[in-house]
Length: 139
Image (cartoon, rainbow, N blue to C red; front, side, top):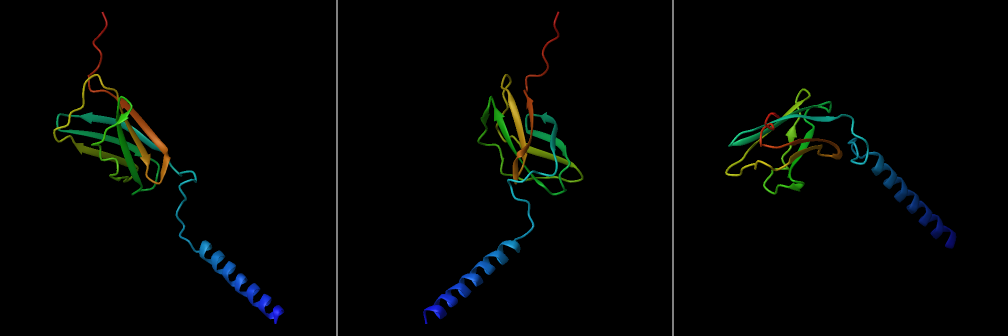
C-alpha cells in the first residue's frame, strides 16, 4: 500500500513538473527587458515656438517600436511632460510634438530631452538644449 502511494505521488509530481516545463516553453517570443536591445535611438534636433516643442530623431529599431521621452529642466523632470505617450517609429524616423498650452520654456534653463525605448529603458539618447539663443559674438 505504501509503495502504491509513493508511486502515485511520484507520478503526480512528474505530471506537475511536465506541465510547468510545457507552460514555460510556450510563452510568447517577446524580448525580455533585461536582454539587450537590437537597435539604437538618436535625437537629432528640437524646435521650440511659443505654442509647441518638437523633437525629431532616427533609430535603427523596428518600425512601430515605442519610444518614450522625459523632459528635464535643470535636471528635474517636468511634471506636465507627457512622458507616457508612445512615440512611434516609422521608416527609421520619429517625431514628437507637444503643445505648450500656456506653459513656457525659460531662457537660462538647461533642458535635456531623454528618449528611450519603452521596453528597454537603458537604450537611450539625450539632447541638451536651452531657449536663450546663441551666445553673442565675442569682441
